[in-house]
Amino acid sequence: MHFADGTVPQDYLAYVRRKHIWLIGGVLVLCVLFVLSISVGAVAIPAYDVFLTLVNGLIDRVNGALHLGIPHLGDIVSHKWDAIVWNIRLPQALAAVVAGVGLSVAGVAMQSILRNPLGSPFTLGISNAGAFGAAFSVIILGAGTMQSSVADAVTINNPYVTTIMAFLFCLLATAMILGISRVKGASPEVMVLAGVALSSLFTAGTMFLQYFADDSQLAAVVFWTFGDVGRATWQELGLMTVVVIGATLFFAANRWNYNAIDAGDETAKGLGVNVERIRLVGMVVAALVSAVIVAFLGVIGFVGLVCPHMVRRVIGDDQRFLIPGSCIMGGILLLASDTAARLIVAPYVLPVAVLTAFMGAPVFIYLLLRGYRR
Image (cartoon, rainbow, N blue to C red; front, side, top):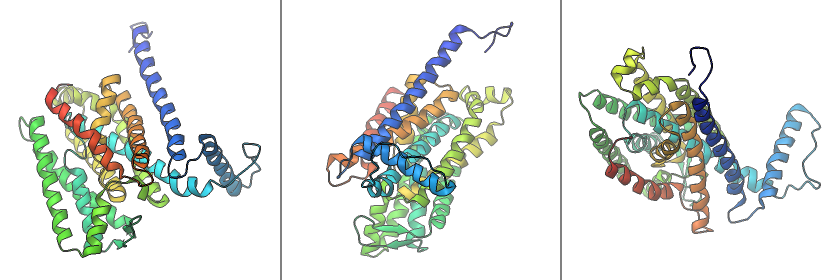
């Protein structure tokens, strides 16, 4: 925004500055919470030791790869926490952040693309569709190795087949949602009811598969369906990170198009936006993100619904700030939920999806009661 002489209004600069301060503050909160999340658990680790373990571990890996002589931090180098931090808690914390970012950015994109404040991978049935596809690959296609261990009831030995099947069924649910959105005068109520119907349909399909599974398979699939960030391996975490980063960059690159769509399809078309193509490609990318997260972590509900609305209350509807703000809030929310899940009934660990459901359901009801106006 500029005046005719090329200067920028001071009010606009202050407006943008407040958004940037909020985003920077969110990143700092996420970093602090990340260290605290790694420090708590059955074995408590001082936050300072967590920080030193992470930094010195990175230094060791850089020195080993590049043959450098970077010194360690701290007077005394101790590796007693390496196994817990690097092998158990670090991948779990990173998976929580990556999944939170992915679900939140998919949710904020769906809400804008469909012009539906209740849009998210969970409420529109896309997560349940992905869960059905993943269960199909595990039970029918044999993509998972069934075990009886409580800590690892199912191991995905072919994550690519599982992800592809989850993606295909997410895509099917997305196509059905897009078809409904093309109906003239389709209201947010219709979209939510369609999501409920799709969720019921794919949940019934998952139950059908479970009926023909043996005892160990049934226990494994039920255990797997619970969303849990602790089951991600480094390989799966890497694949999720690549997909989530790519999707986030795609949505950020289309932030102006989403701002135009928020003003209405006719207004967006008048501004030169190809609404149909933006909507189709955006929903496909959101489905891909949802499929990858569901395939590796199970169904984690309401994060994609809650986070964009929390950020929207503070930052507003401008997608330039709403998209990165939702990503930050998604990481904070899911990481905090995972941390709380490890502490509530310690030494037992609750699946993080249990907490997100308890938290998301009241917010969902609140949004229904207050109406659909932003």
